[in-house]
Image (tube, rainbow, N blue to C red; front, side, top):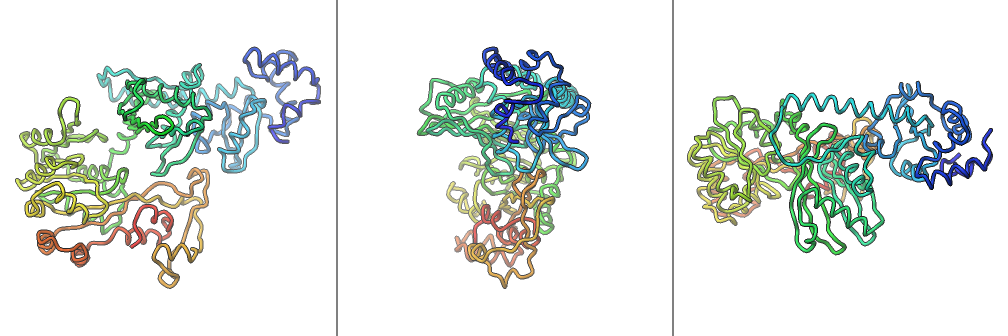
Length: 567
């Protein structure tokens, strides 16, 4: 029997008069209480007496308090925050069958939400509300205990900035629908390894999207323009932005303590046709601390030839190593991994970043502060007076920073930096456009890395497939060229959130400069000549590395076409 039909199905359940149900529904509506609680009071039954009757009427599974306490939750189905908000527990039995345990079958919004959110077969189960709440509370307390221990190890940060507190208890007690939606979204995002949260306004209201593994996915909608305005105002208040100003972009930030875990959120507000769009960038200090522990280039996911080339350039005594790529392509992670490997304690390593994303032990890290006049150029000048051996500049985005970085590389320092460019050859043009002396630039430059992040096929659900001829044509391939390839594609499962992909790997093309390439750059030779010289020097195109992943069954053509150009 469909759960949506439950209220009507109770017209004649065993031992319960239809009038009792109708009376309980009316009283529950007026008193703002769950129908099942009112019905239990009116009948004078215990939960042990009522639950089996209701479960039998629905053809659901009835779960005792003991069964609920022994349940094995699986929050890979949906996030813990969603479970708390909806009061529904995803759990598995010994045969890995999925059960959704609820305490209020009269919740009419629960069924359509579950059908849209859960991507595998499941069975509804009915349990006592107190037992279900107790299990959810114990799960939350376990998370808080671990987080509190970790915070005690780090000690007090001394930051006087006001911190938003979000926990299971606060989510349950939030009276305002706007506050509850915002806090629940932040809670769910942290549990789901989300990098960015998008609040997109439209004519009908607002859409909430999570960026996971570089791809946006819709998680919630709000069908009320007034509610959308209130939600944006709430986010602006949290970020200490001007709620009255809706005509110009605004940037801010705020902190939240989610289950004892301190998280920074960078906020970008941009006016649009229907209101204001808001994007939150999540900077999870605990996740960063975990990632940096033992961080090396091996963990980034490069293939063996790329690893060898990067390590060789990172161990040069002086010069400049640049990492190019779009936003979110892992440039900073690559630089940190390189610095971690060469940090032997004998060299003075200084970084200037906006913001400091990783905390490196034994490294002096300087955050950019534009409001106080500390930009990359000014900070870099100060760093050069601090007797450094190796310098990392978070990003070269202007002529002054570029020129100082080149001079630093020419005067015996090893400089690491990132630059926004599509390929290794575009980097040269970018520096020329910034007015940097070409001869000095190529003299200082050791090499350039252009990288991307590719989603990998889920190992649990990927199967062999046969590519379509149209897809091969669009990818610049044919059946003869790919006859020995191991074509695989993820079908979607609970391990990969039904996307078919789990995790990302870095791919890169590496340009190591030799005398021939330097002479061609100084002579402003065409790009085709540069590419040919680079190929003779062992450089491999980004597209070729991506195709190798497809050849080995590690990803799909669709995925690499999303990230790289078809050549």
